[in-house]
Structure formats: C-alpha cells, structure tokens
Amino acid sequence: MHTTILVVDDEQDILELLRYNLNKEGYRVLTAPNGREALRLLDKHPDLVLLDVMMPEMDGWEVCKAIRRSPETSMIPVIFLTARESEVDEVLGLELGADDYIAKPVRVRTLVARVKKALRVHEPMPGGADAGVLRIGDLEIHSENYTVKIRDAETHLPKKEFEVLLHLARHPDRVISRETLLNQIWGHDVYVVDRTVDVHIRKIREKLGDLAAHIETVKGVGYRFKKDL
Image 1: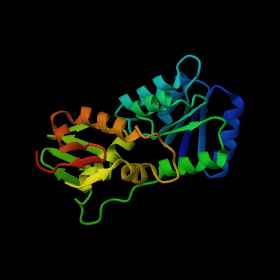
Image 2: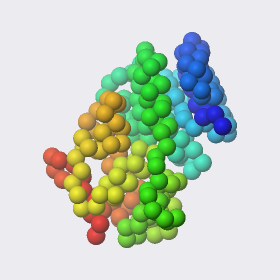
Image 3: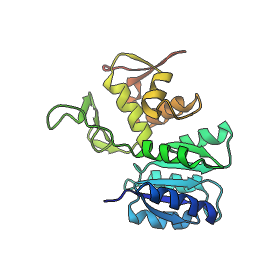
C-alpha cells in the first residue's frame, strides 16, 4: 500500500512540483488548492499533510487546528510550507501541533528528507505483548498506537508531543537536556528554534492536568520525569 501525502497550497506550480517529486519517491499524492478542500480530503486518510500557511478561504493555521481537534486525524504529521520565516510564526506553528516547518522557496531534496523523517515508524518497545504500554501511576503511554490514558480516560497528543513525553517517561528521574530532546525527537539534521521543546512541554502539561507534576523543569538544563508524585 502506498503512503499518501496531502499537499495543500494555493499556487498550482508548487502543487505540481511537489506532486511530481513525491510521486518519484513512490508516494501517492493528493492536492488541494485551499484549506476547505484539504479538510474534505482528510476522508482519504492521508499519512502526512504538507500545508501552506497563507491561503484563501481558510489559512493553514485553521486547517492545522482542525486536524488536531479531531481524534480521527490528530496523529497525522503536519509540515508547514510557508514564505513566512520569523521565529514567532514558527513557534505559533509548533504550538498548533505542527511536526515541522519548512520555509519557501522549497528545496526538494530537503523536503523529501523531512517527509521521510516525519513518516518514520517508531519501533515498538522490546518485550512481550504488553511491552508497548508504559504505566506510571495513573498515567499510561501506549507507544504502538500513540495514545495516552489518564485514569483510563484517553487523551490525544500530537505526534511530537507524544514522542517528547514518551522519551522523558522512558528515562525516569534523569535530567534530559533540551539539546538531547531536540536531537532525539527532531534529529540532528532538522533546524528548529530553541523554544521548540519548551512549547511542547507546556502543551503536554496542559493535557496531563494534575499529572503535569510528573514533568519537572531543571533550570538552565532541561526536564526530568518524576516517577513518584
């Protein structure tokens, strides 16, 4: 089965450029010229969305928010494509749950590499049938289907937030630096701003509610996952 990528941009030449190059890599490509059409195409179950920000009818910010709100689509990786390069824009995109942020003009080889990275399947934890479930008090982290349960109630985290939480929880009571988290979750070859980790930690804490105390800030260094509250 082909991996499906939804490309959303109001510039036809960009749609064609990306469709051609992604097809060459073996991906099935869907295209949408605006945000509203993109939301309709989510019924085709894309594996990743490449999303322009500045578009008529509905901009990329609104499309990303809609994707993240729905349990059926919340785990789809989203990569923003935009001519807007400021750190404020990048942080906003990350706060909305984007997995990556690529500035135009797009370098095709770089984009393909980032797409492959975002789509990479994470290996399940070794061990028995229940090895993919990490339990810490009232918190359950299911690595095989990217779900989190708090006192048996399921909560939805975008992919990168989930990966940050899982990495911290797999190394309890150890201080993990921001640099380590950036390298482990985003990789050495991807540029992201320094505030990226802090933005994701804040969003994770909001979703954990009273269990947010599991994640402790170590000033000037990074974060520690406390096993016992």
